[in-house]
Image 1: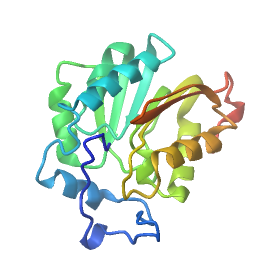
Image 2 (image 1 turned 30 degrees about the horizontal axis):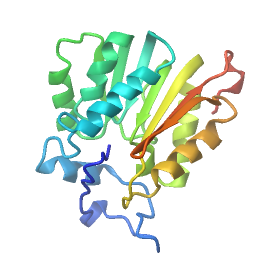
Image 3 (image 1 turned 180 degrees about the horizontal axis):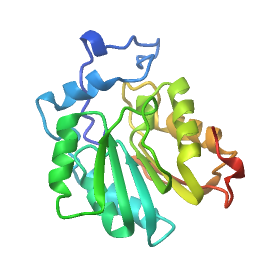
Length: 223
């Protein structure tokens, strides 16, 4: 969720996570971190107004291998800016986030999109029912430590329909998150290799975009 604006929040109290020698958080950022970010700003990462986000959304939609999907999952949907843009390309879109007020804002933003719905869930510990032929993980995986990243990969492997696509998008700047954008993307790709190899990749000075496609049978699904 962190764009080129470089907005980062202080992590204190119950949500605090010890830093490693490199200054990165040692463990996954929890719900308290994100609630703190939204406590005083309804759009701290400027999803609705940033030129970086706007251009990245255009590139992400253009990178989707198919014109239309049956069921999409938008992990870490925030206020629903990109979720709304996905709706014309999908029969149904489910957005996940960890902050109730953020999901309320997403529902308002997508009120005229009857195929959009939203669910409170802290991945990877919580995960929605159902299976999807598109799963978008945009600027999310670097919030996780490596153990939780592996759990996220397993969740995706179980939820991805045969022939389905996974789209990873991650900012490449320096932050205090447990993983860098490259570490998060490469870790996910390595973990998913058995069920969803790389289909195509793109890279700009600011972010990387990786598209994975699952096998056409369920044989490789991760559990």
